[in-house]
Length: 131
Image 1 (cartoon, rainbow, N blue to C red):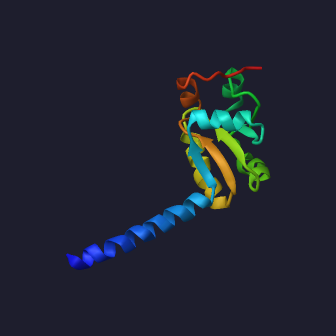
Image 2: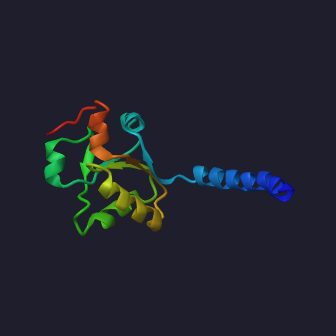
């Protein structure tokens, strides 16, 4: 028991170090609708809607561009954003979750996924536009 108590601070320190390292390397992460909105309004990030063109036309976040996740060219088009920060979303978070995993495997540097997609955006009372 005494050995376990002695090892506990060491283990906690190791775990803290791992968490600090992962927090400092951005990669691709999910964020709330409120944070997504604030970042989108800053004008510093391209906003990518990965839904279909039909879904996009029904309503999207202001300033978003549409790159359809279901098209064979999706990951090729997304390579333009590999080394620069961007925001992206879908309807519910399903497509972005799949894309997020692939983006991390592909070494994308910094991207932010709208957690739970447009559904979360609407639930937060935020507006969509249609053009």
